[in-house]
Image 1 (tube, rainbow, N blue to C red):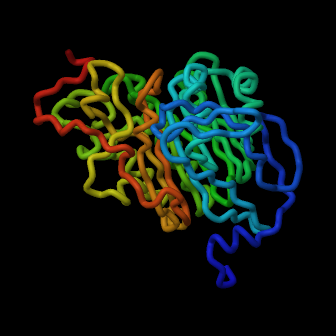
Image 2 (tube, helix red, strand yellow; image 1 turned 135 degrees about the vertical axis):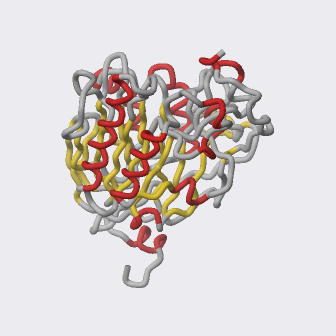
Image 3 (cartoon, rainbow, N blue to C red; image 1 turned 120 degrees about the horizontal axis):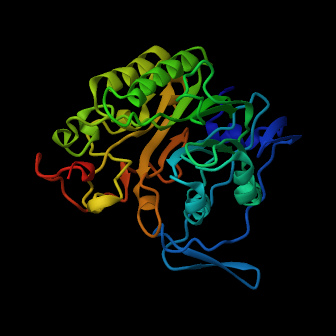
Length: 370
């Protein structure tokens, strides 16, 4: 705008009065750069460096010093310039706190969509409230005590929060599978699509109905939008390690893929990772069993879908495979998308790339089929 670059707009923009939802409590205040958190131990899980406190001074031990990304300063029109958006199925937030907090410190995402929390709203606040606030994140949470659960973390605004999927089906009651909010002028939908369990089962039909409701909801939303989360669908055969291994399984059936394609076309959504890397082998999920991760026998079912006004701002889109390594990881890896600027460069599609080579088709069975 006004001939300024994205970085110039960010640097010159004045602070604005905002209304933000912080862990379920609303407060008002001037948007500003959140206070940089105190140094914490990030360990070697991310292969970058270990940070520790010594006499009040941060000391980096091992590896190169990673860049510290400052949160953008919002302008009067709600545009915050360069933004990093991520989505991650953490598969139990209680189990993943030792991985999540160091990952936030290292990757510095501005907006994070989380799925499969498996925790109530109140327990989420007790578990992570102080740690997130110290890092400058507001949080909108839609949880359940044992299953499902989604959240949006944001340090670039978190307004007009809607919990659940309006008009969506239940199984039999509505589940905590969707939450949406406006972040930096973008409507962000964090979703955890039903698994489907088995083709033609009641849960499978529930999955298709849920996707139809999501399509209707997103289609009626703002032009600038992102749908982020665990879609539990591999869009094409290129998104699984071997199509033959998935015959008779969910996630790959024609009705599921048609429902996803209909969502994308009707709402004008672009699969930004696949658009950015059209011919690359890219997975985001690997079963815990049978050494699937180490053999790179996975699926790409965690997606970031964006409307054209957002997709044209993408400068990098990649799978953070490093977060799937190490001790007590989720079985999913985060998906990271940079808008306007790519602080780590146009890296990807998978970071770091797997060392395992592709297996010969037909030689590997899924663990549940053995």
